[in-house]
Length: 191
Image 1 (cartoon, one colour):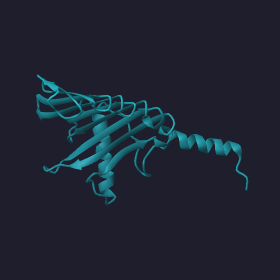
Image 2 (cartoon, rainbow, N blue to C red):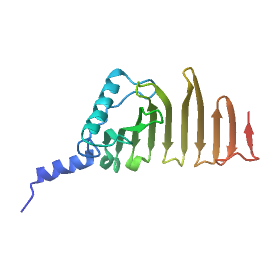
Image 3 (cartoon, helix red, strand yellow):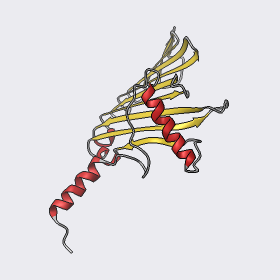
Image 4 (cartoon, one colour):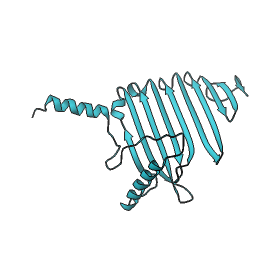
């Protein structure tokens, strides 16, 4: 049986374009602003999906509420991934872990950025982390982390690694350290 060229072309484009969800039955990830609290629409969407999982007899411990992963296209040009997962807290409430990634170039070689945040049931942002890599981290890599200590106070930590961690710059709440390689060492500077 000969497969028509148009069908093979369409199939090839679909494979390269990736798939909308990582598993059947999981809604596609809808991007949200991870630098602020969640909006009311996102909270309602996440709660409805968590309720659907519970009603079907599933467990909401680390359940995937939304997911998108365009990994086949990342083999040659562009990667987009996003997910929302639940995490139960000690207080019995559900927390939402949201992650989104973008990569450029074959296997995200040229540039990769990832952003993650955790939110409570009311959509209040509790943590935020970003990571970026240029040339798979061999040229430069940076990380920024924020954690809410109380309603008005955030603890921040930023690191920058240059030339595959040859030079390390770290800033945590106003305290800056510069050193060779990734760990503090005698050939470094602290302020």
